[in-house]
Image 1: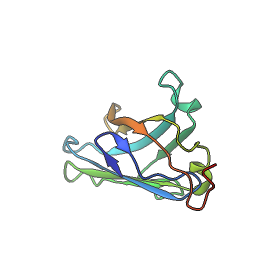
Image 2: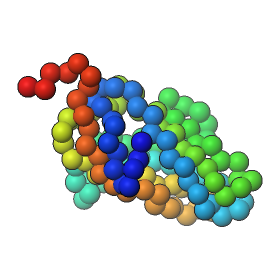
Image 3: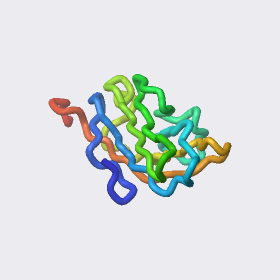
Image 4: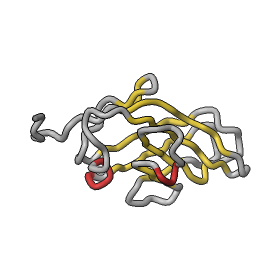
Length: 126
């Protein structure tokens, strides 16, 4: 869950669904893709991020966008598998950014914030 630009409940090596409501989409414009990048340094290119996940309106392993274009809202659901969250280190600050590619060939930054992954349940803290 994202709260004030902070993802607080993600655990390393655990499945995690990140759901983002996306308001204020111009009428008739749809989301073609939405991508999530997670990195320790904002100067790192998105494609070289610790985690880079891109979703589309077609349901896939990484998630799906729901956007009919009939109204001005959409939803992006990123389905982060254990294998994806295992790329993160516990108790390490990461920066995340979520960007949308629109049907009018524009990009829109949706969310930017910080992430502090917790250890997997049952993982030793020592």
